Image (cartoon, rainbow over all chains, first blue to last red; front, side, top):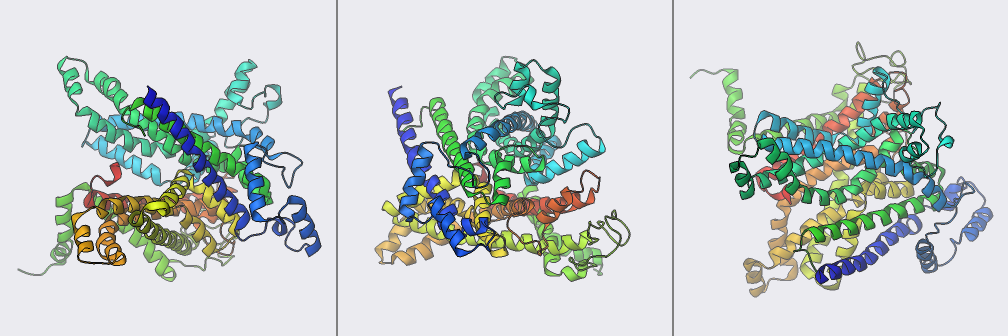
Length: 338
Length: 294
């Protein structure tokens, strides 16, 4: 137990250099690299005087070291500055868009887990059979289908041809989000407001985006679950359970799967990066008003403070997830200590 | 024994079939992947033989014509031939993704070798930086780079290349650390071989085998990232023919049911990525069955 505490403390401290490095990379990419935010923002033909004035205003004329320290101090206060284009703080803009992204990724993750883990376990149970090969093929092929194309095809099939699911946005035009919106998590907000029609509509809009993102990532989990299950199914306690006369289904999906889940859950942490990247593309395809779309809209508008802010939030999030995953892993597996 | 074309064909493919018996399904996966890549490579090298129209030529037929007749994959809103654009577009995506993977492997392998071999403070710092970049979502990094660099073939190649450097670095550094302890390296050192000789002649040949597998899988990933960037409207000027940009353009016509504008470019991106993934998976199983499980 004392060892575990020491591990957690050390691991948390080690997150600091990681965050610093990530923040520095963002700084280097957005401020030091060639490409001048101010002149491109002003259209490239602005007179020198105007550009200089704007630079002075934004503090871009100060030495890089001063800018860097100032930038870190900004992040530490969680004040990400003001948008160059709109009269809005960057932090506010991000907070406004974040629930949509979290809602999408949460449901996508559930679909990934259910589809990936079940198919993987099923394939392992029927190892070297035709079904196994088909599931493995599914795993490889779905991994190679770009998430945005899968989204477009699902939109085409289920949205246009069959016309059973909406293809854009979080709510239909007849549902006013202002009647229930509180936290921004529409699934929770509609339920709390007791507006079940709106809840149904929100869920209806979630189906295609969540399946798009979820199915894309399920390939990795198929492979992972299958590999882990194959190892577990060889273990002595499985043979023992078999000998005790427990039904085969129960052994595979309850005993074995439970043991195979540990590495799978930690893999989930590593997939968060893929999930967020996929979310950006899914949001663009489905006009989903989340952080990814915010980032891209502001890139087109060349709103550098917002671009920087969104990327910082992603960086902080990644660092936090990797910390949490490592701690969970250490709790589960006592061999992992510093 | 008299000559027959069937027998001659059988003899040509006999070695492939023997390999198939030896390695089983993995060999056929590898072959299928290689065939897909070869077909698309042919497209990229000799587009003139396959494409009936110039990819930029407008007024090749009716506007938004559905597939069939003179237009194998239909036409777009500017009356351009979709199939011709697919054929010429293969050059962009193949060029960018292979070049990007080459670039990042060059940088990643070099840094990994140096870092693993020299150890010390350089190794610590490089590892920390590479680990941080590694956990960061590659696409977001590429988006940031592409947004800063502005559109252009070289720029998008660099943006894609940057995100794979840590993959090679981590792989090569780890192996270098292990190989450094081997007896034959110690023997080389004992007979007075210089650091460069040891790195280049003793360690490098031993790490290169696994990087081949990672390279093919990286190209597959780079293909999807390249297409993602251009789909998002970043990375390339509109004058270049590219599958991702065609997909983004076709997206506007999805609600009105012009399915061919999105189906074919997306299918080609998936197919190309699948080709490299299958090649990589096959190679991995045959060269080193445990590599991908780690």
